[in-house]
Structures are given as C-alpha cells and as structure tokens.
Length: 361
Image 1 (cartoon, one colour):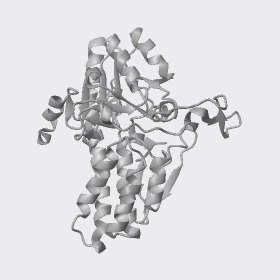
Image 2 (cartoon, one colour; image 1 turned 45 degrees about the vertical axis):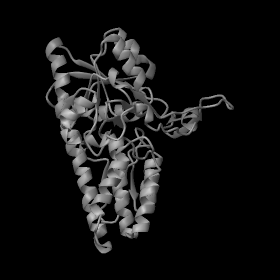
Image 3 (cartoon, one colour; image 1 turned 135 degrees about the vertical axis):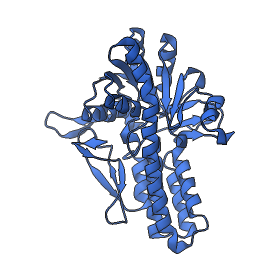
Image 4 (cartoon, helix red, strand yellow; image 1 turned 120 degrees about the vertical axis):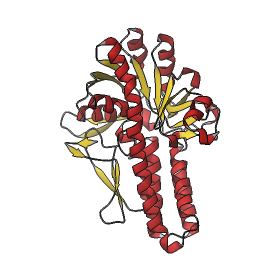
C-alpha cells in the first residue's frame, strides 16, 4: 500500500543484503519509524514486543529472522536454537509455525555453505506469497460489499475489530483487503473501527491505514458494536484470524467473540478473512488453541500524545488492582457466516474448507 504517496510494505530486506527493515508499529499513529533487524534475536524481539504483529506478518518476520541466523551460523544446532527462540515469541498465531516449517523444508539436505542463499530465497518467496494471497482475499471478499451496495443503493457500513489490514501482513491485509479492493472499484463504503483495547490496534493502526487511503471511517469504543448492529447501522462484519481450526472455529483478537454473538443476534453477516497459512489442520476444536496471556501493563497504562506533541505513558488503573489480559478469544464456527480465503469463500466448516483445499482431505 502507500505511505505519503510512496508504495510501502511492512517488511523488506535491507540493501546491504544482511538485514531486514520493518515498520515499527508500536510508534504508530504518532510517528512513522522503521527499524533494522540484523539477527534472529532482533526478529524475536520485534515479534514479542509487537513492533510487527498480525499473524501473516509474524510468520514472514520469523522466516527472515531464520535467514539472518543462517548468515551468522548456518549449522544445524544454531538453526534449531533459532527455531526454538522464534516459536516461543507468540503462541497463538499458527502462521509462525507454518513459516518456520517452510524454512526447514527449504533447507533440508542443503549443504551448510549454501543455506544462507536458499533461506533468503525462501523467505522472499513467503513474503511474495503473502502479498498474492492477501490480494486474492480482497478480490474474493469485495463482492460481499458490492452486493450490499447493489441491493441498498447506499454506502456499505462495515465493522471490523483489531487490525487486519496491510500492517498485519506484508501488504493488502486480510479483513481490510476486501475494503481496499471495493474502494478501488468505486464502491461507496464506511468502516466502523473498534478501538480494540487494550493495545488499541483499531484506533491506532486500522484508523491510520484507512485515513492514509482516504476511506471514510469512524472509531468507536469496543462496546459500541452491538448498539450499532441493533440500530441497523452495520451491514456486515469482517475480521481477521490468528488461527482457524479445521472445522472453522476462529481464534482472533480478544473481543471478536462479542461481535460475533451480537451479529448472530441481529442477523448481521459475520465473515472471517484469512490465508491458508492461518488454518491449523491439526486442530478440530478451538478450545485447544493456546491463548496468549500478555502483560497486565497493557491494561494499566496507555500511551498517547500530550498537548505539546510528546508521547507520554499514563496509568489508568488503581494501583494494587489485579489484572488479567488474555489476548485472544475463540469464535465457534456456528457463529461465522463464511470464510474468505485466497481460493475463494466457503462455509466455516470442515466440509467448506475441504471444498477449497481438497488436498487436505
């Protein structure tokens, strides 16, 4: 996508051939900052501290981190340690495991001296595959918005939760890809953007993306979604996914389940957009997905810009109050109207997924 009119991706290899550049998403929306990663430790830090985030981008960052390790030490023991370090960063998003398995496969049987070149090629390919898949998700999802506009003759009112735009992937995004494609095709639309506490990825990242692309949007409190649906102000909901089971249960940012329940109550279509790398074919039941528990400081504190333009951190909870911070929840397949993937749309079920991915049967 574009930043200040310039085409940008969230991650790209450095010109020196020994580093990777990322957009530091912890600085948005107040500052646009890039960071240089030169080691697997840098990549792990960027994932763990959410300088990069979003399931597809986490996977590609891990792949590039693995490549950086081959530049430093490509021997088996070093690569095994790097794999373990990267896998430990975020337990919920399955794309991380998918990317590292792809890197392992690429290096299997490859001489130590040739591993760095092979690893770089595979990481580059994973990045390009992610871009292509997200663009395809947009093409398959845009007709959902086009059909609503054709029926109503008015701007489509869509609600999304968290950030599943291009900042969560290498480019285009998942849940926002249909928005970008529909916008390109001239479909009038408006996006309700959940703030997505406690890290405010909707308010800080989704809003920043949509503003940069001049797409009409309104940031609302997380608890406003059901109210908007009850009053007929939401035509559909599209969210992303960090892990989707083989039967269609969807794990996504905490608060997604509430939106799905409200959508079910008020007859609002609830769709989930995801690439194949987010499907965990080894799991049937979403209750088996490990849910990341993040630091309570994310709830205790907020970061913002003061009247003088400086970034400040302030405490908002009483000192001494206990804090729990589960980062994700699971929406059962029965509440999902449909899945939008790079191969098309399907029902949120094992049968629906196998129609698109028959090789998994």
